[in-house]
Length: 157
Image 1 (tube, helix red, strand yellow):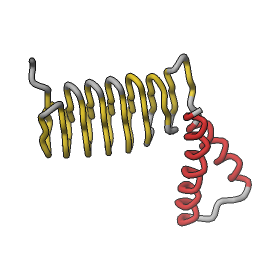
Image 2: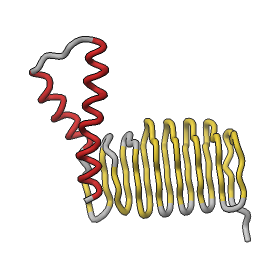
Image 3: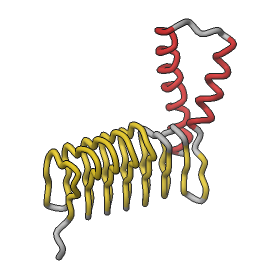
Image 4: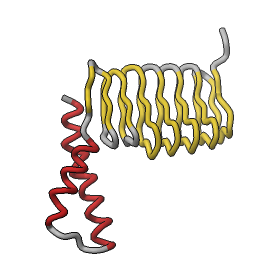
């Protein structure tokens, strides 16, 4: 149910942004409207396989979530974005961004941004920005600002 609501909200917002950008550039023909709506709906569509949800640019929730470039992910286990802008990732276990910008990552175990910038990372074991800058990282009772090419790990008990 949550993915349907996110889909219904996401498509009109992305469509409005697309129309605004194209209106600034040139006025699109009316025949292009249906094609744009269909393309955005297809790209935002969540595909659910036993709780593991896949999408291209849609906003999703599920047991495990995988996307190419998603702004919102909420997962019980793993949230993974391949590249792009990820505004919010919350995962019960691991939150990953392969390349891009991360606004907020919260993970029960590991929060990783492999290449790019990370705004806020909170993790149970490991918060890392491999190649890039992590502006604020928190792991258990440790925290730091401006972590560059380094992982903040929880102390071993």
